[in-house]
Amino acid sequence: MDAKQIETWAFARSDAAALVGMTSGQVGNYLTRYDLFPARPKGKGHHVSFKLPELLKLCAVKALIQLGFTPEQAAGALRRSRGPYSAMLNDGYGDKQEPLYTFPGTLFFSRNPDGHFVEADSADTQVSIQIRCWPLFDELWPRVRAQIEKEGASDRPPYPGNVTEGIAAFEKRIADLRALRWNEEA
Image 1 (cartoon, rainbow, N blue to C red):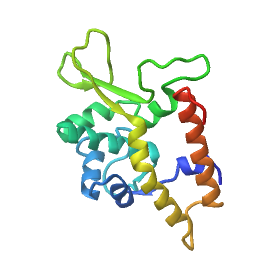
Image 2 (image 1 turned 30 degrees about the vertical axis):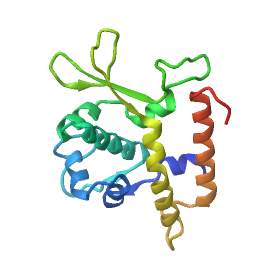
Image 3 (image 1 turned 60 degrees about the vertical axis):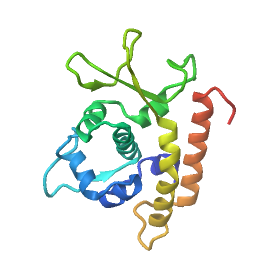
């Protein structure tokens, strides 16, 4: 098993809810009522699974709500956002790349002229809300790892291969990426 299989491991809605600290009903609301994932099919009869990028987006919604956003505002801000996982993968130091801001892997949100929060920041923005994506990942990963180990050890694992090797490869990839993005040594 390789790192990509761990990255794309799919969790059922109830498992995803437990991993991010929500109820299955709350996750369902983000799917249908708040349309957090606009590309997803909606309605009865559609099996919904969540991968690491979606789990991190749910964690970001939860963080915004804890900051005082309503669920609708939090989902609206992140609906068209590239998401925390993309920010982790792409923001920071790298080949011919300097970080845009002080902390790599940060999402910035400010109000647009319509009063909605959008993923944007500029020098003329008076107030900007930031989500640090690496701490979101660090808080979520131990639970995700435990769930992957549990599912991988079952009689009928969802993916073929050695889960322990896959997790080790994924964690090495994340450590290397973190070192690159923060301009440090792994």
